[in-house]
Length: 335
Image 1 (tube, helix red, strand yellow):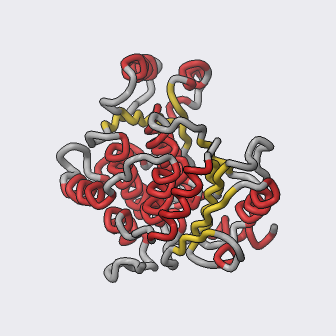
Image 2: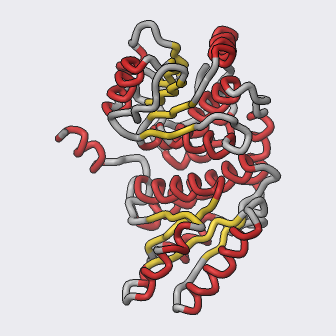
Image 3: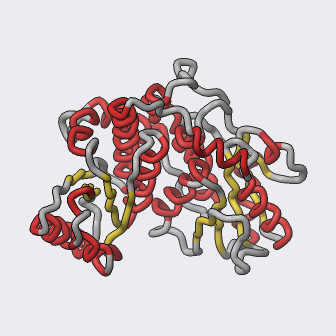
């Protein structure tokens, strides 16, 4: 299992360009498939994804993709301690791309003590050295946030096998993403064009249903890659509180970016229409971005690839290095 030979690990733009190729980089071995089958036959009462930052987002995407098919609960935990309910007959999927994320290692210890069964996904570090664990070893070298498609290539099929669901053909999805990105400028504005609307504003990415984690991911990518303030929110909840917050003098600083889907519940689709109208009547500019694809995963990943590219373009406009995360590194050193 290796990274594409054309990838440049010192260049975030290049890593983002390789998003489709990274999605199809992993093949699960027969032993792991056997373990997943044994767990499924023994009975699973819940699946808990643990991780932080760029390592955690694949769990959120997997949950969004599979929650309409899963008959058992799935949760994402980004903390040192697991909920008390996570114990025997739970599966904990622990992801730390570096293998040294302290919160994830702590939660993993918690999972071990609780009797939960565990599957670890990492490229190295302390996590890869743990004994008596089922470990999926990833190729290292990427920034964790750039490794989303690589990590998802492990987390999604493992979860599908645990749930006894048909495994998604990620190679087909990868090919779709290549075609989708080749058509930027047709079904959606080129990233460099949308930046003209975003660069002097605080973007607020708004999603619903399966696009909620996409909105969150976009916010994080603007934070880390572009070194800019950004926020996210979700409908319908934002209609019950956030919408009142734009009545003050700071409203013109914020740019709501509405992530739309043809797969939304009809009432959610109407809420987006009305929300856009209310915001514009208040004097706010809005941007609508319509996801492309015939399935939830196609919409999620095509939009994610696009918004990742937007974050790199914004970094260039801001004159900042999209690769470096100096403040995060400083914080870790001081802890």
